[in-house]
Amino acid sequence: MKHIISIKDFGREEIDSLLARAGAIDAAPQIRKTLDGKQVALLFFEPSTRTRMSFASAVSRLGGTTITVDSIEGSSISKGETLADTVRVVSSYVDAIVLRHPKEGAARLASEFASVPVINAGDGAGQHPSQTLLDLYTIRQSMPLKGIHIGLLGDLRYGRTTHSLAYALSNYDVTIHTIAPPTLELPGSLVSELHKRGCNVQEHEDITDVIPDLDVIYATRIQRERFPDAASYYNVAESYRITPEILEGHKKEMIILHPLPRAGEIDPRVDALPCARYFEQARNGIPVRMAMLEEVI
Amino acid sequence: MEDEPRGLLISPIKDGTVIDHIRAGAALTVLRMLGITSQTDEELSIATNVTSMTDEKEGKKDIVKVSNRELSKEEVDRIALISPHATINIIRNYIVVEKKGVETPKLLTGIIRCTNAGCITNANEPIKSVFEVTDEGLHCLYCDTVITTDIESHIT
Image 1 (cartoon, rainbow over the protein chains, first blue to last red):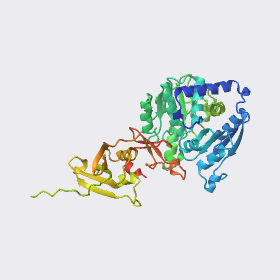
Image 2: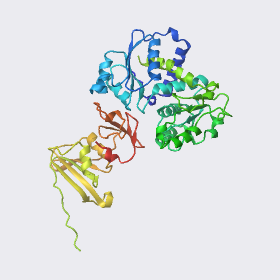
Image 3: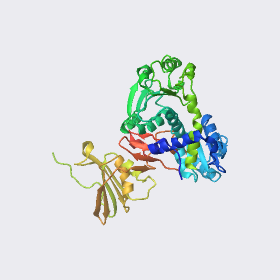
Image 4: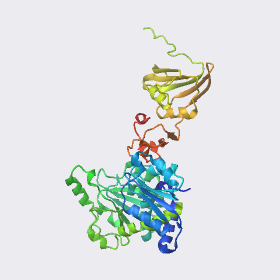
């Protein structure tokens, strides 16, 4: 039985194979009914719009059906049931479980107690492998992953998407340029792990220093609560905002990604530029999640 | 000036395990790691801050003797986390029949409390924490937290 818990459990070949499967689905989605007669539980114990809807859509497009829990209040966990028991019981109803939970490591625990495959749809500040896979898929639509220069921009300390993406990209001999305000840099433990895995990591504070070198900009939200007051937040947020002016001199093939939702990190004028791929990236959640479901069921 | 008279602080045991060369002051933590609490009915002898010619910390060490129980390798290897130079002596009929050092285990199950309050191992779930011992520190296999400092205070 296969589970998808963390991108760290994936080697390069497995990632390539899953992305290739997503590509095949994208090319001919209408002929796949691989989940015909199957049912998937979407256990979302934390708010989610995009991830929950796209998993529901992915199941439906593969011919399967879903049953959903969309809050702790609406479940027996509010009566004191453990997640372990919930997962054991739900396992007997369905063919797979997609889980989002506020506690880190919850999906790993679920995989230990479930008798059906578990897909992690985000566990607290921990892992969110479907987001990483769709990020990789979106990059690969424009260029091979091997050897790219990617700029990770914004809150790199607390942003789980950038951590997982950086880890996954370390399979592909990439150069990672981190562009973050002081105190929000990539954690030192992750940087040393990336170095160990042969990844070149270069740290910057100013995005204009590296724009001409980048193949991909991956922007993330800088959260207001990370700053002591509104003024210092707005100062920092403004200097990390992507505008058409900042992008001057970029490579012709460069693309911009963002896991969304965005606050003010990307000027709406950028949306019309050919390099803006974040809405395409969100759409790619469907074929990638279809591929993940096919992989485990 | 006369030398202090030297002698045995605690008696030899007939059968059981002697853990010697424990870092001075760490004996009680060692007992906790072995699951030996105040509720135990095992016969224990504990000596702390004993003068030692070979140990660090100003020539002091701790010794723990557990009668009538031969501790397994898995049990004693946990001690390496806080006292890597400890030695284990298995005693039968007052004779040391086996003497070995401790080796840091690759995995620590149910011994360390994860420092991440958001980790599922700190929730009310029927699981034990599992940490992998790495060069960087202790790596939680559930939430990926790495504990690098003050490991002793995170022992459950």
